Structure formats: structure tokens, C-alpha cells
Amino acid sequence: MATTENATGVLNDLIEINNDRVAGFEKAISDIKDENIDLKELFQGYAAQSRKNGQELAALVGSAEDVETGNSVSGTLHRAWIDVKSIFGGSDRASILSEAERGEDAIKKAYQDALSSGELPTEAVSTVTNQANEIQAAHDQIKALRDVAKL
Image (cartoon, rainbow, N blue to C red; front, top):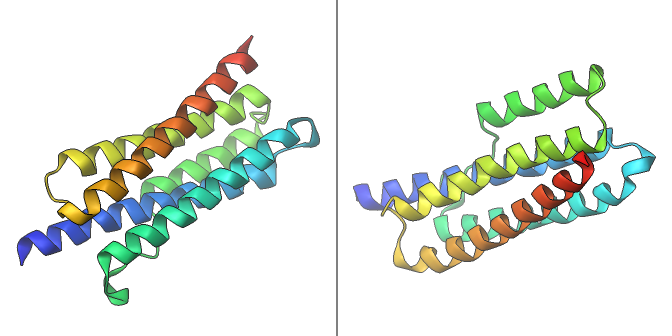
């Protein structure tokens, strides 16, 4: 029974960080000015990706009452930091992308930790691996955009 509970905990941690990612990208979208309009579409796509991820993970958890629906404390703090930075002029393209990359680093690590934990049931490993690959690709795209913006 502990293995099932541990697996549910790992999957719920991933659901929670995907919820954080959605909220973070939605916050960034609301703060983006017209000169960075292309980032809105990109971030909307990543928010949709995390909504899909959360649904897939929830299906793996199974029982609706066992599924995580909230955000993590660290995700809430990250969004508060984004708010503070935007107040003090951190809304240029490089700053936006740096904060997005920081969020992508966190979700990437969460997926790596989940996959290396040994707690995932066999039927969840391929789903989590596929999602981790998509997260890695998103991270790499944001990092590349950030690198260009710093020039």
C-alpha cells in the first residue's frame, strides 16, 4: 500500500508543479507588453501543455479525491517575485525569458526527480518520460530565446 501512496504523492507533486507552471505563464502573459507579443502565444502554448500534463497525470492517480488541485508554496513565491520584478522594471524581454527559464528549470528538475525516484508505477513511466521530454524542449526553446534577447 505504501508504494501506491508514494506513487500518488510523486504524481501529485508533478500535477502541482504543472499547476504552478500554468499560473506562472498566465501571470507572465498578463504582464507582457506589445513589443513582446510573440511570447504571449508561446507562453499560452506552454500553459496548455501543462494543463494537458495535469489531466494525464490525474488520470494516472485515478481517484478524484486523491488528485492535487492546488499550487506549491514555491510556485506562489516565484510568481510574487515576478510581480516585484515587473514593478521595478524587470519586464524587458531578457528578464521575462530569464524568469520563464527559472520556472522551466524547476519543473524539469521535478520530472527528473520523479523519474529517478523509483516510485512511479510502470504504467506511469512512459507518460512521465514523454512529458519530461516536452518540458525539456520547452526549456531549451526559452533558453535559446533568452540567449538571443541578451545580445
